Length: 85
Image (cartoon, rainbow, N blue to C red; front, side):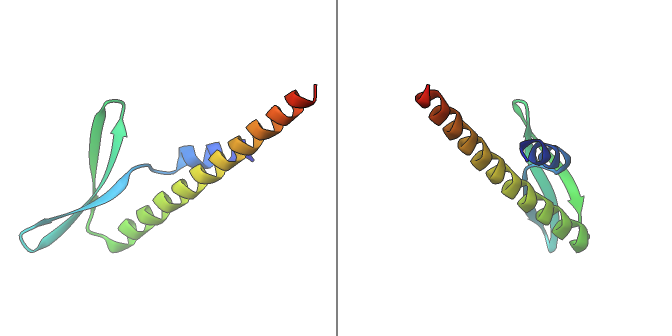
């Protein structure tokens, strides 16, 4: 399961969607960190693409939480096995 979540996370985009209003127009960007830099990529105005990206970001967050829980369970099991020795 851990490997599955790692692969899923690697395939999904990271960051957050940012909306900037210029005049009467809304522009959507995805903002994320790359090393020490903050990167902002233009998403466009297509509502379907923006919603798809939003869903992918939510899935990534869910998968990261699930991976974290699996790691905690793994660590707890290892600790319990070490304590039995």
